[in-house]
Image (cartoon, rainbow, N blue to C red):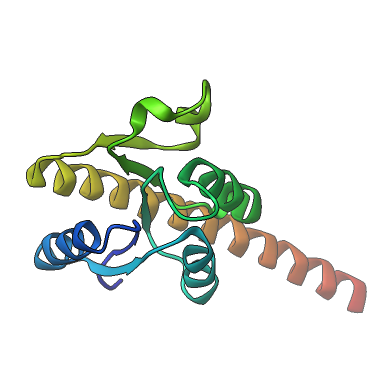
Length: 149
């Protein structure tokens, strides 16, 4: 297994560049995008292990993006972390869309620790999904063999 991948969704170029630099130095494969639309395209290209999302984004906000990701990916949704200076702007219940919340300004060591924890959780989730799909494939193959025999 390669390096864990992290997608950063933040319209502040400076914050995105900082997080890319910090997490890249910690050994992660990091990509940064500026909007929810770019994030959805990036996820279609390659599903990251963790997605860090700002709440205030152009167009679709971070909570709506998290909801859209969960609807599209369902069980395959990687851990989502809200990283925002506007955490108090979440509507009631929206915090449940995220696996973790980190308020800006944040400490670099806290960011690294949260991403590390979420990446481990994401890896375990992917492994369970792969095992479940392998079991379904094996059952389908056995059914095909029985039908042929």
